Length: 475
Image (cartoon, rainbow, N blue to C red):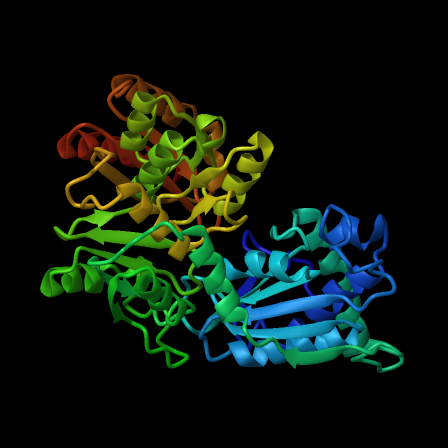
């Protein structure tokens, strides 16, 4: 096994059948379960949950660990699910197969059932040929870097034995007594959690168009909106294993925009493949991104006394208009790097409730420790309280211009004095009216130049000037 990190910023992700094959999935399932039963230090609870054992579960060392597996609609999902389940059983665990469900169902179901480990098989908004494995601890949160490193070490050892061990052994540990079985009713239990949270929300008479991205929300999203009284029409709700996220969902909004207009719908929502993100289109055909959905939620939760310490966490990409709206309302804003992982870390550090990203990944910790696209859409409608989304805009977005400049070494940005001085000068020019952000890409040899200004022309002019300087100095 190579020395590169197995886990990325959101679990393990790669092309199914290549990096992410059945052997790796088996090893990950076995390693995570073995860690529960036989932790190297600090006890299984310290390693995977950070707290006490689940009620009634006893000591993890002498009780079979219970792991729940759910997946999205990719054709590779069943193969990876089977391999993961076998690995879990090989280590003496019990693998419970929950079927096709959105990622945010996992922490809710773990809490409901009192389980030890959650495994989500999904690559979110990626194309069908990619897949991924996301692991959740007993507390319902995704694993920390330290926990992932421990699993990586066990996977490396396991694969070394299986593929090149001197004794030729692979597969189950001696004496393992694990099991694999279907968990019936998981979908209904997730729907009950949503219905309980939004019991007071009456959507009777509301015409809603839902783009389910041919992904994990294709059954549960229309079902819960219908139960709450909405008249529901769906797009991209016929998955075939390969059409997940294909010109649909939250990364391809044109179909939803056209559909809302053609059907005369009051509002439309688009989810991504695993259901943890949502974007909206109002009745006038205007795109409503995560910034505005968060602003709706923040002001609503503030008014109802549910916004913890009256603060919200966003990323550096959040529009200046959001910051202005929150300042006007007296809501504090904390900013993190891009990624829901960092938003969640900051929420926990501050003991705040609400945070999210412009991309539509919104976390409401009073409901779940994960972004939930369906819950976020319902929260926006709860905040509107019968008002039209098209007529109730709470964020006046500033024109934004984003330019990606290809460079030799993205890390060199930190020492490019002339570029940094130009960024400071542009920031002073737009102080109180907009903002400037230069940041290296986390995955590509790019520097991203982002400018927000009161007019399109000013945003274009400032971004073009900065991008030209970055190219001259670093390309």
